[in-house]
Image 1 (cartoon, one colour):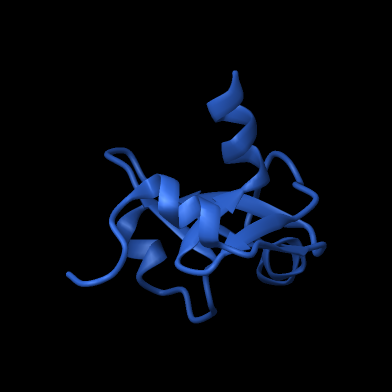
Image 2 (spheres, rainbow, N blue to C red):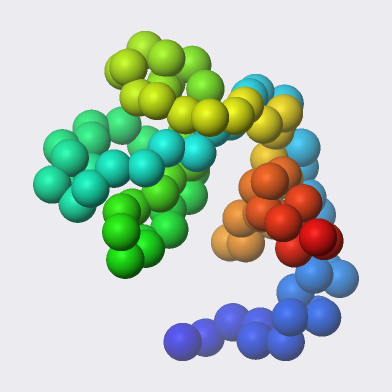
Length: 91
């Protein structure tokens, strides 16, 4: 795989853009996840389920449940850091 592999260099050269739309984390089992027909912002494949990040309005429109609404995300090109992940990493 080509591209910069040094994390320090990657973080030092990225130009983050704050997107202020509210985002949420939802979880579904694989079978239901496979039926999703909209764009996901991030995905975590975990043993018990698949957790994904979508805009809050998309979750509301499709009836997906979530616990919390997050104020935005910071996108670093190929690197995706959601606000909540930054909070967890600092704890």
